Image (cartoon, rainbow, N blue to C red; front, side, top):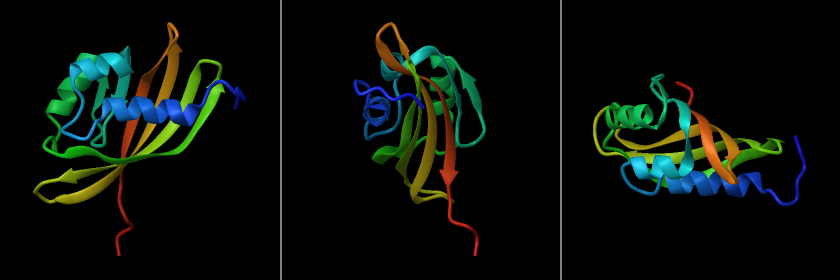
Amino acid sequence: MIQNSTVDPARIALDLWSRLTPRGTGPSMALLAATCTADVEQVNGFGVYSKGREALFAAAQQAVVKDKTVGLESTVANANLLAADVILAHIVSSAEIPDGPRAGQIQFRFTLVIVNQDEAWKIRSMSTTLVQPLPS
């Protein structure tokens, strides 16, 4: 880890995440352009890999629980400056599923790689994990 008193990795991560996932139905192309690199990569909670903003947006539109309300509550589990221009962050966020086998509130843990490109912090890579209790 790098120590830099002018960079607050947790604040940067939460700011980007909050802008990408405002309370509602998920990201738009405009939000992806504002918060993610053009070559962003993602593995979503169902194991679907996407590369590029357009592919990520298309995957979000086709998600099994696409009608969920995202951004109910998001917190930074941890965030570290790995290099002068690279942050590794973990965000815990909840969503509401209106119906179906997963109806109710669910929680996801997102692993983000954030890079500073052209003096702006953007998400370069993200991976989503559904958080579930251990079976009884």
